[in-house]
Length: 166
Image (cartoon, rainbow, N blue to C red; front, side, top):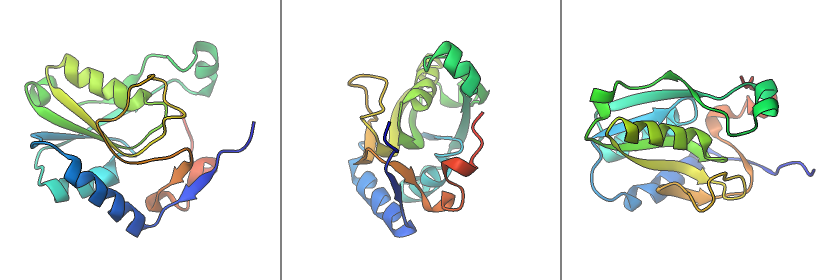
């Protein structure tokens, strides 16, 4: 299997991605739900650009590598942190992450917001249709399409070989 192409972005690149996203939004959002860790920086930049005052976070964990091998990619998520239902019920929510790769994390958050009575709209900087597990499913808003592993400027000294997963 060939190694995945890597693309390192600068802060200027991220600014251009945010500038690409902002004109796409239709209507106002009452709440932003940033997915940790990837959605924190793009979410912060978008809250400033869009003037969203109500900021919440969701932390989602999937089984560690050993468990993934046994149960496959469709294992149930574990929510380590999630907003109380009354904070999102009946509200238009912008759900932000850095990238939609498989789509599992942001879809899990979107579904939980819907189950709580909220109206989620998903947003990422990058959409990778080649890794997407949800067929024709895609983010509502995205700035770029990629087939690369993206390294954002806030991760430059980390990368996948230095980040511990699960």
